[in-house]
Length: 201
Image 1 (cartoon, rainbow, N blue to C red):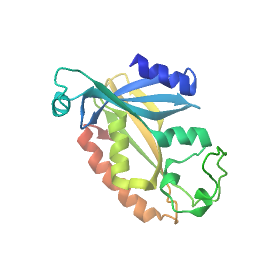
Image 2 (cartoon, rainbow, N blue to C red; image 1 turned 135 degrees about the vertical axis):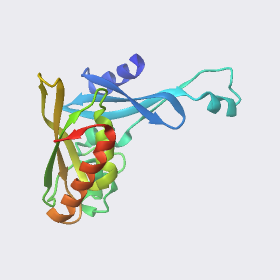
Image 3 (cartoon, rainbow, N blue to C red; image 1 turned 90 degrees about the vertical axis):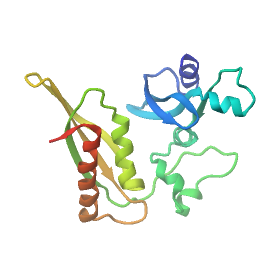
Image 4 (cartoon, rainbow, N blue to C red; image 1 turned 90 degrees about the horizontal axis):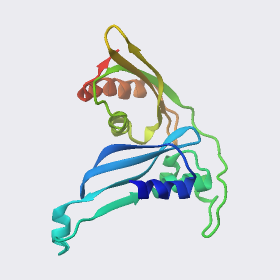
């Protein structure tokens, strides 16, 4: 971990970091590293101890190994000052025409379709993992999710329970969204988030 933290310090300068458990098919245990960049948490890499079966298949059963992978899109976002990772998957020529091989140029924003904002609040169980909630939201709404952020948190001293409220920004890259379609996605999220052991408020 210290080696990878040192790599992040070299790339981004010394900054706050946090590790969380994750799942990758060829490593166990597996972890994800996030850094605090310009006031927001940014996922930058995943890593883990290589499965013994993988080493056996490579005729290296006598060895132990670890692996990591960088999020190249995240690095490019910082290098070119691109605010939204979904732009990489866009076919919009206003995006692609701004870049040329061998040149680093600052991204110039262009008009976007309006966002739809929705909030969800719930009491969290012990061991609640925020990333599990984020993955659930993106799994339901896909690329329509522009951002998920914690906007409020408090603990009830009498109940000994903690509540978190998240704001989800939905936005399409190529059309205007309707409240009806986003309400349907939000309703599904409110139902499926119960699988994480939370109590929706």
